[in-house]
Length: 435
Image (cartoon, rainbow, N blue to C red; front, side, top):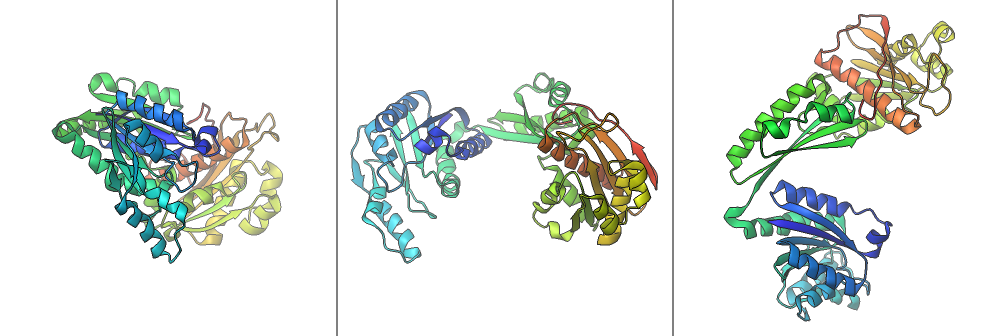
């Protein structure tokens, strides 16, 4: 079966609000084997809403509509649905009880305007809303079964899971398609090169579709499969996944779509290890990423944004002569920063960043995009120089942070053995987003 998604409301149409609902719904439908053909957005215009619903009703089998179920005069979805189906709006007693129960739950009086939310198209099926005042409903228009949901994201998501997905799968019956999505997260490859490496997967595994998503500075390689036979689909997806992993090689961060910070956190937990950070050019971004992972308090102990040279000396114990000889952006400085934060925090590992994020401040020897990453662990410490050719400050901060985490990840896995204790090394990494 084929589906469409319709988002309603002037806020969405005008760009005042970002339509995150349609993206979420589309992903959930695709996961359940329901192919989404089109996304549409219409403002608070009754005539246009009626016409759009009828158009969708003639095109596809299933549709999800969000927004316009509130108590105000510009909430027109129920009226538009009734007009498109050629029926009347009537007071639905069960819907009214749904609205009333919400106000009783919070011991608040229900206004007369809220009764409007219980006016549903004749012949529609109520979709109970357990977390809001706006009941949803299901209604046939033309050849299509529509599911109307509120626009509030957490209400929509709850009702999508409890009502819409089960209802759609029931309508599909034995003809239901099974879908699988495998997401491989990579770092260190430009999007173009990542695409080239896995371009042959569709030919090697018929029925598998390839997609790439740039989520700077990571690249996600996505494999999509659909089949009526789930066992055959799982077998084909497993083969395609292994094929892609072999070609992407050491640039794979995760086989199941995890972000770098989640992978690093899991590796630290598995080793009962801890991390301390000394950030200069990244300004706390590394700490922010790592602490966005639930449970990070088990391994994240300390972070210091030692931006000035004096802070590097006073807090981390970087030697003044190192800064005088090499400057703040140097492998040796980064190494001493990492050793210092490991000592100060009492952690298993220390990680540091010092670089030139730009757009100004670069020199011939140290152009904008240069970063030195320091690593200190139980067995060795080192500094490494990297270069990324991005002129934008935020992009540089992001890729500097990701590169530092990748160095930590490779050392946790034991795949980075290029330097020894007390040494500094330099290397250059050039490329486009995702490098």
